[in-house]
Length: 612
Ligand code: F6R
Image (tube, rainbow, N blue to C red; front, side, top):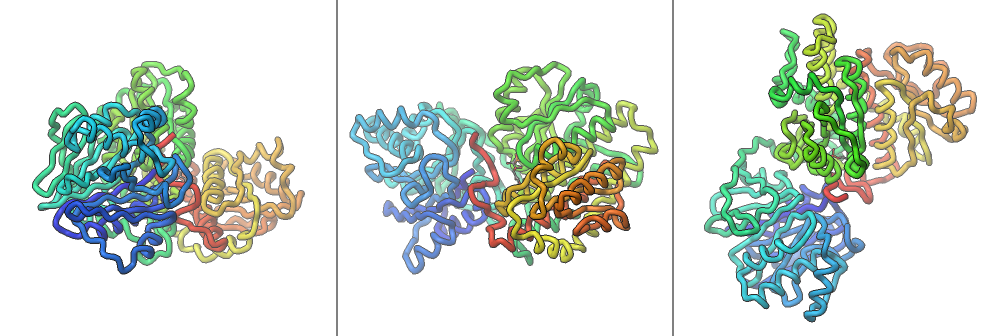
């Protein structure tokens, strides 16, 4: 959720930290703050609002200092205001802390500190931690590192922490349990961040801190150990990351850039895996798990939000092409039920960020019950990628807009590759059908490019409905999950109430909502449901609803009854979700822009949901 950045080295820390926070703002944007230390002199600036508000606030001030930490917040404890913004300083000014996550036993620790005379300025659990470390440091005469570890051994919760101590200005401390932290290694300097994006501009050598590890970074070197002081030899990862990927380029918003990147991101997902020449699919990441996957009695997909919708498409794909029963579960529900997991079930966890707390907890629970867990993640080295037995990276590139777009299509591509490969292995798919599906997949990037060519026409459709208060999305079969996804996109970035429904369910309730003010987006392509969906459109029109139909190019029937049609190219039914979702992504984007909403940073949301 929140974003953490830290720096220690020979340069001025402030601009490095501020730039890093801007790259992490997708993680939270309620408030921002930075603390820098210059030979024991602490300068702390923080405010409610975005990093740009912080930059504006400090204009012209001297903020020199070569060690510092910064934070961009998504509020959990305490409303977003100047006081609750991080960093938090301990009562006697010894420790400064930035924190991502939740300290569950903070009330008990706070009560103990109050008894010892501590007072608190904010409502945050983070200030409690800062005071707790300080109280141990002062009362037990510990070093800063010992005090941090002593506190960590006693707190319960999930956290990524960046800490500085004014008495030890040549050190930056970091600790992780549950919330990601990456350390960038360079000559005489170190970078700390919640993910690699703020770091890759300076170095390609990274250490991803593991749970229950503490890093001490100084200008002379680094040391990583666990909470009990045992030294750890970390794995140094070489990241191959194009820094241009984290900029907006010529686009006004990341979301628009990411929608337009889909022909490329999908091609990247298939690269080295789908071979259209010899009609093979090679999934190296799950090669060892393939025998178990292919003989699974059941697949259980766990995911949240858009990734859950991708999982629903996967259900249709696996059931049709591999004949394996699939259940798709919200990770947040699954983890708290007492689900029946058999030895021959396989769990597939889908997550763009690889950090979603509920999905991670569902994986852990499935592991405890002996299941094989496969991951479909975008962020390389993320917690879910590391905790699954094996998996397939989507390789969609960094997704920075809070609304997920290219991650969804890449997840669906991964699930399609898996379903087709399993179907072939199980003998369900004959060679000709398999080859034709592979040809279809290879052709998807070009079909999406054709949809993107009609962006200007789609913008005009959005203009017609920009003031709508509600919307309904209808689809059937493979396009039912797309209806859900279209509605989610509209509500999260435009704040327009929207519902997705299987089209035939409309008459069991939602039809009561239809009147001449209700836009109804209908996915009505040429597939086996075509005649039925035409009937559904007529039912809406008979009640004076406004119909915007996504149709197959050349359709002449629906244009006679719909208010607007958006054409998409001819495509195999199983791959339609990949193409049909694109106009819905664009509609949401344009409606949000026309309503003056902050598309990349919608209110109340954060990209990576690392708390329950
Ligand atoms: C919607 C969106 C969210 C995420 C959800 C899961 O546009 O982005 O619904 O899909 O929070 O996130 P990941 O995929 O990172 O686990």
